[in-house]
Length: 320
Image (cartoon, rainbow, N blue to C red; front, side, top):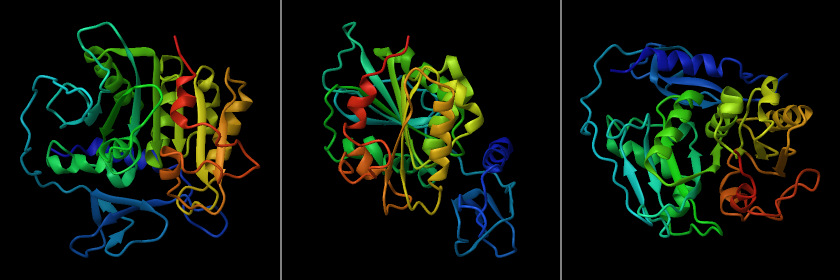
């Protein structure tokens, strides 16, 4: 059953964003798919952008029809494979999300050796419900570390576990907290080295996790790309290192969003000064060159240099 509360959270969580206008920078708004052309779209079929897409409207309502029956079985044993990226569909495990999990070839469940954990959060366009359609989960690996792993291009200095959850709504700090705790209960994770990164809505998820959990957050460092956060929560980042990336010409989430967030964090004098790297002439998709490192040398000299890959940078930080 589609839950109304999820969609109310979507509306509430994005209500504070600045809509497109000539006076304000374009942040984007929700558009809902109007399947029957009656002027009211579906709340479970939404895109987030400035311009109105064809067949989408601003008004939405929840369809009362029952969704199709789930195509996955209920709870199954949590079994993973070393050195590969494996899919776990929503409601198949005790995780609050469906997810992909990569454990490095060096991982050995029979020893006490632990590994860093990297949690990657996808953007709005990659959302899905793998409890209803297993194929939805593939969207979660369209970008970032899971895409590099899938293509055989994942090559990091320090082997780490990579977890890629998928949400059907917006990222929830409490759900992400539960997800990390689920992974910690099942895997040999170095709990002092838990990291998070995400793009667009996923970058907002990174900020929201630390803003919402503060001292309880497990993350030692986050790398939000092309995202936004709540500058009023800058004091929550005292123990979390932050390195934000953004395209200077982003036409979906204005670069000012990252500027404001990093400034607010640094005004609260965190243990590690928050960093911001900006790519001149780059629009919203500023993540590919960040995740694979090809953006090094293309960044603006007016902000923090991209002089180390983000995975080595994160590994420098530990949290008790």
